Image 1: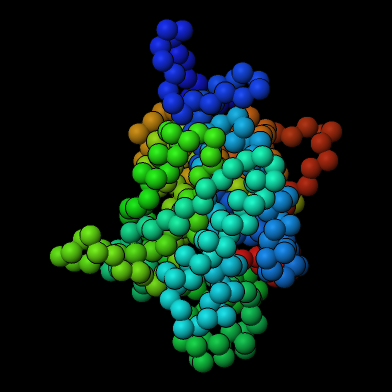
Image 2 (image 1 turned 45 degrees about the horizontal axis):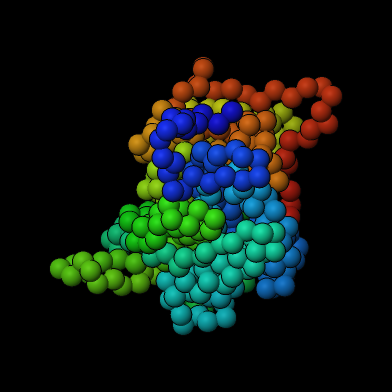
Length: 361
């Protein structure tokens, strides 16, 4: 059940952003949805525009269906795409490569959404970061493809990369500072309030990282970094006063003993419980940042008693909202946590860790 229902007097004027559809059901919830860059690259397929278009076409009906019932802003990752661009043009800086990947992905998503009757407006979003952040001393953001240890070492030596182990393989890592200010947030807000039939796509790839020049704050410089898309999505949701922040994955919600036969999924949980148990710390490159982003949204929202974040599988969007699948993170949960109960009749198998090459971040 979605908690933040809005009621209006029969004599009161309706807000301009309130939309009505064939069901005559008003749209009540503002939802920021974050999908990973992996959503546009199926496992085992080459990263080509053709394959990205196919993957986007498979995802579009789900996003369009959500937008038909709610006020949606879409954000996305760009790990695979920015990594490939970096291989093609090693002299280009990551702020420029990030902007290029955002244009590429925005086009692909817009085309796919248009084919199911949903008009989208991608916005190349600049995001201010602190150029003195400790993130520049310890790069953590995985980008690009996976390599064996010998190849990774050779690339690090020849191209000056920093590489780190990602599961059984190695990948390039770049700095990932926290987002401090989303410069185009007013453009997103204007679309929501004055063009409610258009779905904004913003903060793609975590936004294009920039910094303000000391003494001339109106002057911006690009920064060599990649901002985590979930962290930026959480800030976008807070800035837009969203009701719900959804992070879509390909492995369901938050699990205890992930990948093991006795794994179990959290149905509802508080930020306090997640912080106390250090949930996700075993997977710092995947689930860890998602949990941190979900907590950030819930704790920093001005509607903290009503809002919630959710983490779940892309194919389960409707069931995530009804809490039949995935994990909901909110301030008040009886006992701090509710574990998902599944009947004996359900042929459910928990996700397992495999020896397949890890996907892009």
